[in-house]
Length: 375
Image 1 (cartoon, rainbow, N blue to C red):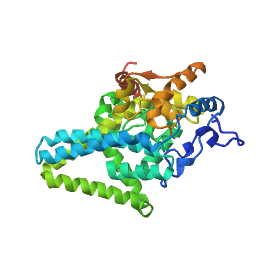
Image 2: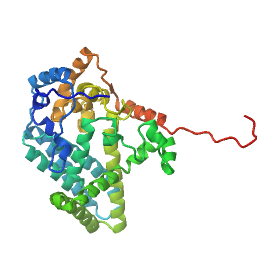
Image 3: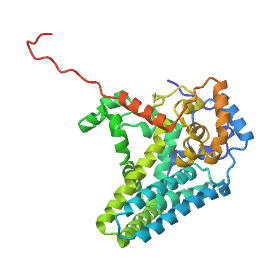
Image 4: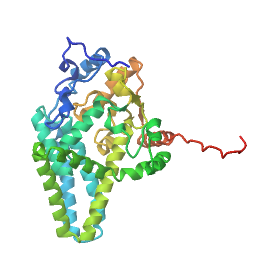
């Protein structure tokens, strides 16, 4: 199947807006500036509307209230941690820090997409601090992985988020699982939320493995990750006993992964899966594989603006606080061009994810009948 590419006479920047081809680009993400495949007709018209509304304009000052709120969360949590001392009540603080880390991660996500400042350098520097130093994940590794997802959402073989691992996203993936993973593939819906408790650990492993491939090229990231890990462990062991410190880390990281997974899962899981090169143009490829979550400002705050996933995928460098204002333009445009626009509640989105996973399972092969048995 063929994919659409831009006409040679058209410059990509004319369609993507300010720095959008470099959305989330960083020194460790060579794929970040690879041009998207797309038709220009429909998307160019929508982009013109969005530009006229100035929804792609970026300013660090617009993110200041959010930055202050997250900083206040972290300071309040640290104060409570020091006040409680060596107590098992610290597990409640661990749960609190899982929420704070996720909110910090959402801010790092926006920096990775170049949503905060006009300057790529400033966005990347802030992203390094928020990701490596703040939550302990490699900014360069995550940006590269996330950019590949944005270019090929739900496309098997190109989107790392639908590659076969513990979970399978297509029947063929499920059928290729072996051993214990085949058992998991038969009961994916039941395993989904428990497995999210391991997601933060999985992200940490991916970060470290990537950084160790060419460590001399990633000294800044390694240094910041080392400061994060060393500083957190030192603080825990100064205040808590080793057993309580271990329990604190286990609870905080497990709930951190659960919160992250529950925030990202509604966006694409259970939506259209693309196998092979898709003939759909850019706008349809992004809209038909994405799902929005209703709920207004409260849901947007809880999910870091990712509930407006369709708008985010169409305009990755748009500041997240503008996605709500962009939604009416996109919905009207999709309705006028007969493009299905999926929007549902948070609970219903989880139900759809589980129903989809329940339907993706290995083919059960019948055992041969014993010799001489009746047919």
